[in-house]
Length: 83
Length: 121
Image (cartoon, rainbow over all chains, first blue to last red; front, side, top):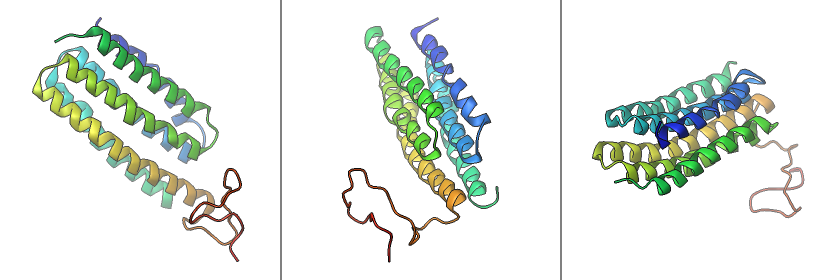
């Protein structure tokens, strides 16, 4: 286990509070938890990619960065109007 | 090119800050307070991780992609945070613009430019 993988493991603990916020409370609070989870996921994937020395896999966090933004906007749109 | 101490410090800072922000997200009671906690993660943690990747990995592909991520993430997060706050306000009050009967509490009691303490006549 390298330094990067230990840090990736430690960062995984951050998903627990994000999950609690995402699965509880009002819809807008859940959305905030979901957005924070997206941010953590990007960091996690960068740490894992570097930890396993797979440069081509950097496409994963890059894709999650773009998709988390798009999906967040869709959720916000629904939250604002229809939910 | 390996500098474990520098990388360790950078990654430790990034992960510790991210975990603290997650706890802050959980502890806060209000949606608008919770929204603040993703900013340090995308700004400081992501930058620390990107610098660590630069230090540890000489591969240009890794560097370019982690740079794009470190730039795009804060930009996207700012837009998402504002849009989420707007949606949350609209859900709670039914409208986005300020209404006459609404007052904005100003810390310290002063009157900031463009913000009012008393209700609008």
